[in-house]
Image (cartoon, rainbow, N blue to C red; front, side):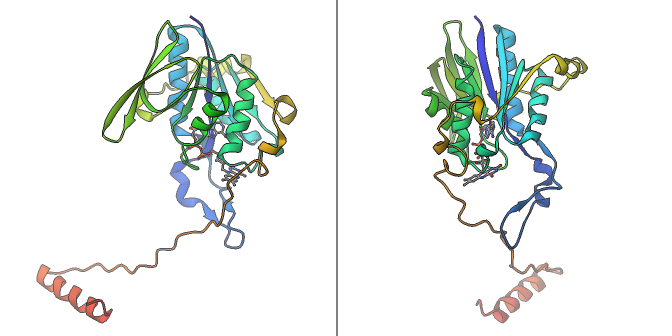
Length: 266
Ligand code: FAD
């Protein structure tokens, strides 16, 4: 059995530097110039699962991303790890899209390489964190979708049996391929890049597709195609006072009562 596998990967701000992201007080625009970008962490697990399936059967793994030109970095990483091909959907017309407009462009890119057997997504991007893009791509393509998957078995008869993490345990689900699977971090331990992988980059197929390379209705892309709008972006200020008491317990209790009285709280 040969599988045509697609992995959706997103470039995000490095979570280790989230505290350095600030907002322009005037415009509310996010200022993240000094923050390095990385591959969305759980997307590494999505790549790993795709590679393991290709190794078990055979076929092709294509990594796809929608983003600015610098998103090529995460696609190069996917190729280094072992993906066969990469596609960057990059056009000013795609920018400023909400999750639906993003999913629409990704679905259009995937359609262009159909028939596809399995699409992998991460469960959630660490920055936007809506968990919407995977299910929306599946809906747009008319595929079944299984989310939060911690174990996946694909059988010779082209059925997928997935274990999902749910609130109080696990849920087993079965779907016929083609299917979209959103993975959780528990699904596997991603491999690290090898020197061979880094050298192989030069021989891999990398494509950048713009508006003219995909079949889309321009009404559904970018800001125009986004049914949601950002109402307001603001920094939450913590204005609570902090008081650290020291001393014997009885002394601290008395001080607490005194402070609460002073504030008119008791
Ligand atoms: P999730 O749904 O949490 O991601 C789940 C998985 O989907 C990921 O693990 C990955 O596998 C896949 N995935 C998600 N996004 C991508 C992608 N781009 N490529 C490939 N795979 C992906 N963001 C901007 O960067 N610039 C903007 O100008 C902008 N404007 C916006 C305007 C509005 C009105 C709104 C509501 C949002 C805007 N965003 C913008 C945010 C952008 O829509 C989201 O970052 C994007 O849709 C992904 O959503 P998420 O981060 O919640 O991903």
